[in-house]
Image (cartoon, rainbow over all chains, first blue to last red):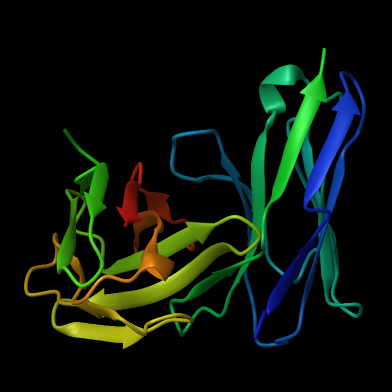
Length: 112
Length: 112
């Protein structure tokens, strides 16, 4: 049972483009939605996170948009750079369980 | 060095052998996790622990055993390795206060 569904599986954009990665969840008890970034050969690292009481959060070039009624959230990368080429994972957490459930991942390639 | 370390980083074993992957963290985080990463499946939770001597199953626990006698260590054992357990395994930890997970660099396991 995949509780967090992520799309697309892979994405190629030109430098300066705005890649968008989408995630959908099923469990309305989730209360924390982070995005993790992973470079080859490394473990994932937290990029940005949002809680369901806000609809948008920005940190630098990275923005999360959150739609509670649709149970969807997305990551936008403004002015994307080749250094943003990585695998991105969305995730969801229900605080009192401690379990962070991840989506399937999106491999992003930003061409120079 | 502070942080979370995994060993071994690379391991090749044969079907039916027992394998233990080690995880050590220096922050005294309460929660620790084991994930496996496979193409097309993202990161799937195997087991997690909320504190020493408290462990619970994740999404894909079959074939794995964990223990947590000390807060800082969380070993993962494959009692009888199978080819389907060929994967990259990530250990992670987090505090009680934020949802951020801190990942190790992974252990790449190949079962022949």
